[in-house]
Image (cartoon, rainbow, N blue to C red; front, side, top):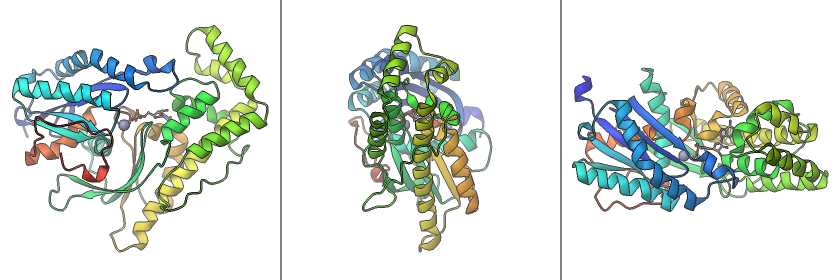
Length: 386
Ligand code: KG4
Ligand code: ZN
């Protein structure tokens, strides 16, 4: 399709702590993708503060959208539709993006498309392939969505009635903390920075992953559900019973005296061997749990009545974790499945994935109404009802 006739969708994402806007053509070509992270604002509190997130979105939304349009070198008039994350997410944060998207759509007479945030994370896998002119991953697939807000296992296939669209069946989700949240909370317990995931990933190879035995996470009911809060408590108990509180306090003090975020080498120097062993063992326990449950979902399709899955997808911020990548690749390889990850910029929250997820709705012209509401708790199964 010639560039002039491509459908250009402006995507807007404000469900958590990233203000993002993007322009994507035909659900495949990323013309611009701007992400403004609020990490520096929330780092002081060791987690996302919802009120601060809304305020920062209010400040950032207009410049971020303008920058995306400028980078795509198009005027709002030339956009064919406006897509926005409707949920799930923080209510106040969602409302900023939704209200702005509605106002833009109304003012510029453009159709509006409300998008499910987790569908966005799934479309990021397709977008990665399509943007690079690579073939789509073979379907059906099992997808593991692992971020700071969500941990989800689902089966993904093309919708038989609308083959341009994904059909998603949710098979399991976390009952308490999300995987990324567990990384962040444990990092906080250890006096490390926020967000903790990337730092724990980098520090873990310095420790012995066998040093602390956490045992498997046991759950009653659905074996494809997750629960990480017990592991977090086990880390806390380990700190208390092994006399590690003094070293945590010393680290906190050293960081506050430094007056800036330590470099990786400085963090390493601030962690004694028992701390590094604890980090490595915690990460290994999370990764083992994610890998085993993802593979259990895959194997369920090998023995059931449905067609066996043909690929494994991993997306969301925690998909950047190097140990998770290595273990999933090895485990999927043993059952002959390829694993697909979007690049980091599409793994973490962004608006290109929102524009891509809206494209099938654009094709079918299933527009959202001007009365579209934010859905902070939106279940994935109802994602197609925009
Ligand atoms: O997808 P994302 O940017 O935002 C949410 O939707 O939450 O994910 C952010 C989360 C944070 O909890 C962060 O600690 C975690 O992803 N994360 C990681 C890594 N990189 C980011 N966790 C473990 N290892 C990493 N390398
Ligand atoms: Zn997300």
